[in-house]
Length: 405
Image 1 (cartoon, helix red, strand yellow):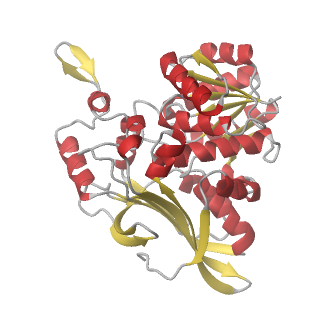
Image 2: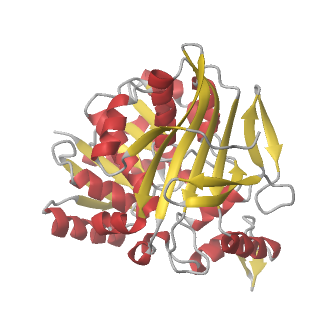
């Protein structure tokens, strides 16, 4: 009897729970917990209607370690799937250590008062999880997550050594709003307004953020989606991949942004709406970015009228048996198809499905270990098979296109 507790009832949480409900042989008992229990109850009603399955719901404040630990002790899950906010990763990991529960998340920790994210805070839990005989799997969404698995698969099957990796993330969909973010606005905007870093020849090199003069971008011809302007961005999976991919000399991350998105974000930054420090407003302190979040559409509400594709993958250059070869592994996900299946847009879908698959790998004992792991450290084969079976089929093709030097 396997029992999973999922924390977070936003767009991604909705996908994770519904995909778990599609596999009752693995996820025999499910609890969905959030600060707002009404959100959990609404998803639970959907699951009962769609699949005839009843799940448990609970209210919990993921900022409070003891409150989390009490819920874990009471429910006794085999695994916690954290799809709450990245600010809450450490409190949830602490609660798992207290209660003796395995852990999986989709995004690395970042402090609430600083627009900076890296794995060091979570990697520091290595010995504590190992001593408790517990497993923590970090970054099991799409990017990070599936992109890391693509890298592990390429390293295992396609290359003796990989020289360069370019991760390319394209959302070619249309949600019909003048400006909206596809996941939590606060997290999204903090991410894309940071100074850019990429790794080359053993060091991290910095370039300007996407809204600034001198930012690096180029046009890439994506499968199905076609040519899209793609901007160099820092993304967390690069930090772990440089540790685990043999022979790597360079890794970069690219993401598409429409001209309208760039223009809106430039205006918002220029007027101070992307600030994360408190400001005085009519005798009270508010954080401009949090106020902006309240004004923007809820990412979980975008799916109903969303059209178009999301295309995410990795381009590899390296050597197999002494011969240089370039490969492209990618997935195409349709926004409308995702909505028909689980009432979510493709960005939530491509994050939630891999979280479910990672949880499946752990509960089945395919992924096992003691300590803290990034997904590229684990065997990719069963995960890659599950992607094809669970709604995120992938392709491997020879790559003959052009990338910036």
